[in-house]
Image (cartoon, rainbow, N blue to C red):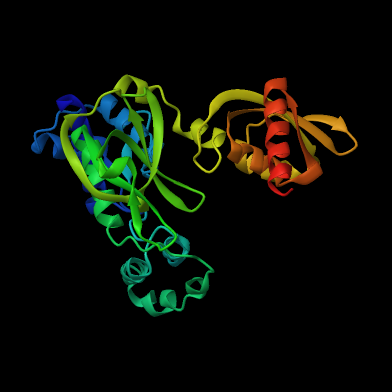
Length: 330
C-alpha cells in the first residue's frame, strides 16, 4: 500500500513540475525533470520516467514527448487552461444531471463559468438551463460522494442508511433503518443517476446503490475486503450487461434486429460488437447480459424490430414476462 501511494505521489509531482514549467513552446529535458524529482526526495531515472509518462497518458493526462536518438527526451504539458468549448461541455453535463440538486447545479455551474475568465458572461448565457431535467432533492449528495471517495482512498468500508419514498414523499428506510456496510469500488453514472458500485462480502457479489438515496454516509473503521474480487471485476463490461443497474443471472444471448438499430446496439454493447448480416436488413449478434425484467422491458421497447433467438431459457422467461404483462391488463 505504501509503495502504491509513493508511486501516486511521484506521478502527481511529475504533473506539477511540467504544468508549472512547460508549455507548447517550452519543453523540459528528462535530465532536468529527474533532477527536480530527486530534489524532492523522489528517485527516478530516464527509463522509469519514460514509463511514468506513458502511464500518465494512458490515464488521460496529455503529456507530450519529443524523443531524440542522441539527446535526452523532452516533455511538456501543452495547454493547461480549459477552452470555452471544454467549459461549455462541463456546464452542460452538470446542468443536465438529475442527481445534482437545483441549488448545487447553480453553484457548480457558476464555479465552472468562473474558470473561463473573460468568457464568464458568455458561458453563463446558457440554453442548457432549460433542459427538461427532474432534479433530485438530496442536498447531502456532495457530502456522500466525498465520504465514498475517502473510503476508497483509505481502503475502508463505507456505511450508510438507504431509503425509498412512500406515496406521501416521506423517506422509508430499508432494513428497518439498519446501516449497510459495503466495500466501495467506484462511482458511476447510469441512466442519469449516480451509483456507488461495491462488493458485498456477505453475499459475495457486486451491488449498486443510488447515491441520492443514501443518507448518513460514513467511512467505517472496517478494512475494505474483496480486493481480489474487485480487481478482477470489469466495470465497463458490467455496465454493458446490466439494464437500469438491475442485476440478474449472467448469460450470453443471441439477438436479431434490423440494421436501422445498429447505432443503438453499439451504444449499449460497445463498438466492438460483431454483427452478422443475414440479408434483407436483418442482423444478428451475441451479447453478454444480466437477465432481468428490466432487460426484457428494454427488448420490448423496440417492438417487432428486435428478437431474442437464444438461449431457449431466456426466450421462455421473456414469454413469461409478456404473458404476465397481458394478464395485468385483463
